[in-house]
Amino acid sequence: MSIPDYISPIIGYRVWKWEKTGLKSLCGERWKPSQLLAARCRASVVVGPIAGRAEAVHDAHEPPQTNCTCGVYASKSLEQLLTTGYAKCGIHGEVYLWGTVVEHELGWRAQFAYPKSLFLPPDLIPSETKEMESCLEAFAAYSTDIFIVGGGQKIPLCRRGSGFDAAGLDYLIGKRTQYYARRQRDRTLMRGDRVAVLGRGIAVVERVDSTWIQAVVWNKCELRIARKCIRWDKRNMRWETRPSASVETNGKATAK
Image (cartoon, rainbow, N blue to C red; front, side, top):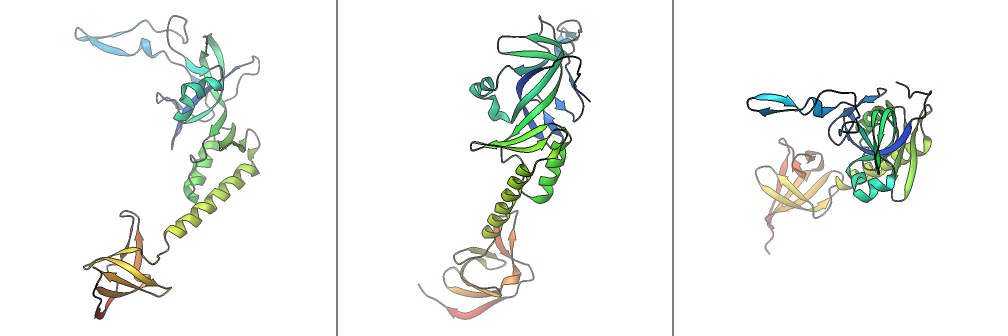
């Protein structure tokens, strides 16, 4: 797909949603990589039951038409998207519009369109390595300029015709490093943490080292558990002993 060079396409502003399959309009229309989006008149095909039969709103026509609402929509300015709140609905950016274009006071309706540039919120790209790589590969398929924006920053991530930008990749690497550091910190068993001990209940950690932990159940029964027998359960979001864990009772009780 290429933007026609024998005309000057209009550049508008719009918002997309992002799913694993790629960009989508807020109404659910998919924007495929390297393929122009051709407008369709839904009013000519949307039907409803009238006296037991289906009728179109009007005859089929090439969109857009001045007396219809069909066409690919775009705003004339980014400020318009910001003031109306649409920019918060997903990815905002610039879009090429060409073919037949109907102008309105605040925007256009076009026959054909394709993204010119995309501005991503920083949390859109996942920090987990495989998910990040998959997401970046999907974005790169659009062969358009892509930026990460947020907190007053505008970091180039991908340049049309040049591939990924070092600044954007450095940002994502830093974000991934912070993610793994935070995850490691969150998954470090510490004094005061609670551990679900199978068959005994919830124990509170009193002491922990690389080999053993000492914990107390119901504030009176002291347990000694091998550190390797304790794992973080993602589904339950808690520390648990493995089914084969060896749990030792110290044989003494501590009264409150």
